[in-house]
Amino acid sequence: MNRIVTLPVRGTCVFSRALSAIPKNSHLSKISKKQLIPKRWMSSAPNPPKQLSLPALGVFVGVTAGIFVYFKQKKQDLPDGKSESQDEAKETKEVEVEVELPPPVLPDHAQYLIIGAGTTAFTAYQEIKARDPKAKVWILGKEKHIPYSRPYLSKYLWYLSPEKIKEWMNQDHPVGSRSIYFENESYYFTAEELMENENGGVCVIGGQQVVKLDADNKKVHVECGKTISFDKCLIATGGKPRNLSVFKEASKQVQDHVTVFRTADDFNKLYSITSSAKSVAVIGGGFLGSELAVSMQNRAIQDETGLAVTQIFPERGNLGLVLPEQVCRWLTSHVESEGVKVLSERTVSSVAFKDNKVVLNLNDNTEIKADHVVVAVGLEPNVDLAEASGLEVDSNLGGFLVNSELEARSNIWVAGDAACFYDRRLGRRRIEHYDNAEQSGRTAGLNMTGGGRSYTYQSSFWSDIGDILFEAVGLVDSKLETTTVSELIKDVEDGKNRKVVFYRKGKEVVGILTTNIRHKTDLGRRYIDLGLKENDIGEVAKQFFAKEEKKEDTSENKTENNSN
Image (cartoon, rainbow, N blue to C red; front, side, top):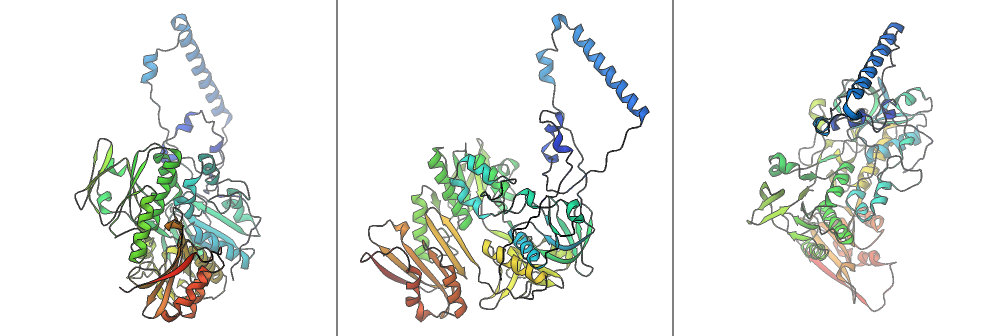
């Protein structure tokens, strides 16, 4: 059962409110970037200020008055009332003030502890709270953001005006307004409030990473040195973006011009860069790389910035690891029609930095120069906790090994990108899509409150690449045998044509992907669960094209089989 609960909880974990009172023009507002003043919700509170004794107060007042008189006299001694010379002023350098932030406020014990602060963590909290209304849930996340939805970062946001983007990226957005954040800052309790609140709630503690989990003693060790015991724990650490060794080993000048894309901060950085850059190279031909390439190129055309986007990847075409060859070629042609220069079946052999540009030397001796490079070559499950914590990782798929109830050890669950679970229809799997993150989070939250339910949901995903919409459910892999059914519509651009791709293991259908067909993943999910066979594909395909705008006598269906 999936339930979404909106609760009248409030607050966010807070650093010292005294810091927020510093005037913008104060020298303290020029703190180095390493010592950023944290957001309200990032849980910390200073020790109470010590009171000055009367003698100490008298000394302070006396010294202050002396300094004031000295500088007043010095100003009067300058000829014609002039201040210090401009040359001296130019030599004055700003001094960075290193402010030691107070340690975060963390509980000694957590009833429910969630490691990771993304989609999985948020939906797990919702399910926990729905079943245990007085639950106290603590979410510890590495990112300095409250939970948000990642899919917008590579698609929708690139088509908005800067003013709209600012609204969408506002953590303190008005209740009910559209935003990448599931809830605004006031939805979350501060650490102090949650400790005292008898009715429970949720607190997000950002910028804190769990470095070790002691499963036997039900404790976690946080990087700040704190140890927290727990009753129930969910690992929702997600994935971290892969990088290529050619960029990892490159000079600092090259690395300063490379974005390994994943987070909201990455979006903000890349959006700013592409506002003035004239050339960007995207490395990667999967969903993320293709979405970003087309989105950035469309924004450049819309805003007339003159940006040229080049996409480089080793596969034979866009989504080459997912789509059968004929659909892959069709998509690549469409990406090129959007203005992106596609260099398929190529890899980056070496990189250099020359004339303020990154120089990419490809394996076919092609040289590409770019103002900035975006790396989008997939995810690695974030299993850093495994070695230190003695948790098992799947040797083939990666991810924490869990049972069908998403449990890794007693009272420890794993969900989302980092979980490798058993699918009763399709075998052991690890999935890196939003729908799986959301639904597995709900199942884990349910089981943390005694639900005892197997994760049997066939998750789906979607992607917008220009004006082509992809939706899919089950196993979709270009190595599988496929049957593609296309609806060819007369007098309609090729990008508008609708297709259904059935992926097979032998005679059994294990995955279904559609193009430009909306809201049919439930239908695909049902047929996979029923064990759809190859002989029934023709009749079933008609149901995917049904209930759309009727086009009498203008279309026909074409079936293509591909056996690898």
